[in-house]
Every structure is written in structure tokens, then in C-alpha cells.
Image (cartoon, rainbow, N blue to C red; front, side):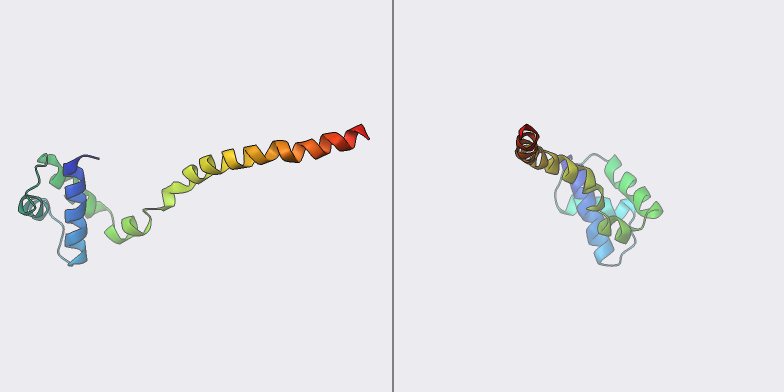
Length: 95
């Protein structure tokens, strides 16, 4: 993420938390007040996003996309336990 993108994100969260309508002008004002150098297109993009999406839903669903990472992390742990479980099965076949 670029500095401008993070600044616009925080500006949207600040405006939403204060109950102020999110507009490109207000996002720009907050970014400039924080003395952050951001590309001029970020406020417009985030204002359009705020018009089309519910900010509360975005905040509440921020962790819902993490299911894929949990599977990838769990796979190596299960993979190391599988050979240990397979070894007793091989011994039983020999008897």
C-alpha cells in the first residue's frame, strides 16, 4: 500500500467515525492537514467507494478473506504429522 492509500483509508475511517459524510474534498482536507503527500486520485477513489459500499460492512468483514491463508499455514503442520501416522500402519501390515 502506498502512503496516499493509507492516508485516504484513515481519512475515511475518521470521517465515518465522526458521522461526517465521506467526500473527496473532506478526505483531501484531512490528508493535507496531516501533511501527507498523496496522489490526488486517492480521495476521489475512496469517496466513490464510500458512496457505493457500506463502511461498517467493510470494517466488519476485513478479516473474512483470510480463510485461504489459514489453510496454507495449516497444511505444513498436517504434512509433518502424516508420515508419523503412516509409519504405524506400515508396521501393522508386516505382522
